[in-house]
Image 1: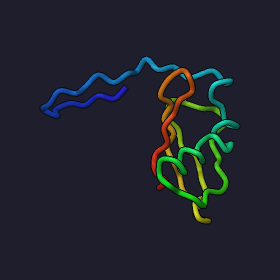
Image 2: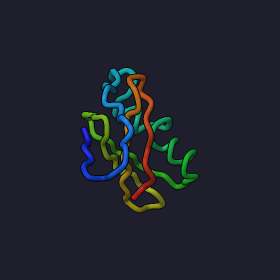
Image 3: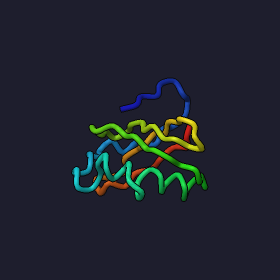
Image 4: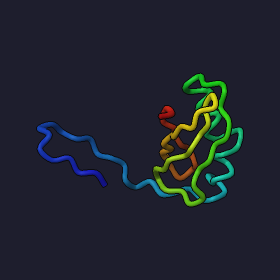
Length: 93
């Protein structure tokens, strides 16, 4: 849980009730496959030369994956959005 103190403005409620999806809905193989992180990077960020994707075997609500983009090693942060296995991917850094 994040706590913001002394900001002087109302902070919206953060949904902390999200649980990890079942391994059938989201797992390392799915994330590293053609329909996982690579597809999101191509669709959302119009990246083309994406090579290997390496995500951790044990997933959390937020975790980093290593990706190769145009021959360079980058990192993306994956955030699990719900129990159905939907996720978002940050731009590579």
